[in-house]
Image (cartoon, rainbow, N blue to C red; front, side, top):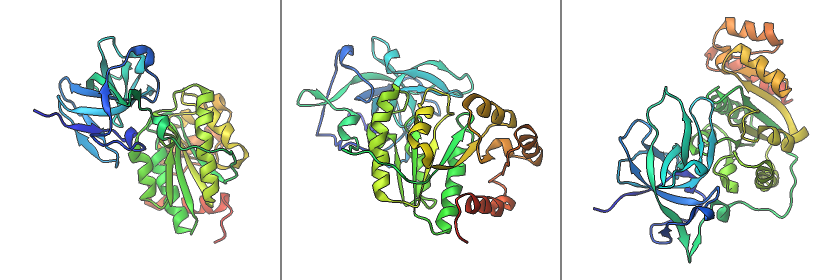
Length: 339
């Protein structure tokens, strides 16, 4: 019986069709971050046996299916840690994200079901050469960036960054601004940034566009990859760039390097925090004072009051319908948008 081949969303920048590559097993010495590989699904399916395809839709997978993804690394505080170097000698793989980030977990939360297991079938090759994400990466001969930028940072993953970002895009689109949204650090997944497009952003980009499966890479590699994207966004000349920084600034996703690359173009920083004390932690550890706090740290009036007591910062619960207008006013004021 023929196996079904599925492409994770990390393959969305490539030109793959079933007939334009070979699957070849390569010696480990030839493996590297961003290599496109294929694995066969094995094990007992759980809720995590789903793949995000190249359009951002979630598809159930079963043992025997073939999944195309890319080698990479992840260091998620709430879910799991691992990378491609941890893949066993006999080719035992985990899907580290639903986008088919391929590696193997060395630490995984007991609160989650078993991650998707696969067995290495080989690298995607053409004419005897492996095919890599960087083969399809956005490139630029110049580097310029002078776009006013609103950046969303978190105290951890799952702190409300994407939810806040969607609301920002919706309000600024309503105000008539040409907004581009980009996720510039984190682990590859398409549907988060795709949701910005559905909420008012005119264009969307992420680090996958410049050939990175995640931003757990050496700092010099991150900077070299992200600059062509910033240059491209600069050429598109938006009124504002809304940037989501995945995870939190001090995790190994190059958050500090991103802040440095954006530099003085940052005109607003929104911190999405898990609780009021996490706001203090990010402030003291990273040395950044946000302009606003959102996320679970603002769920109730008591939480908002505690944020203000601990830090002096304003908090807004953007999920509260009554807070739509105050949030709109905050954005209009800080971005100096004429009413």
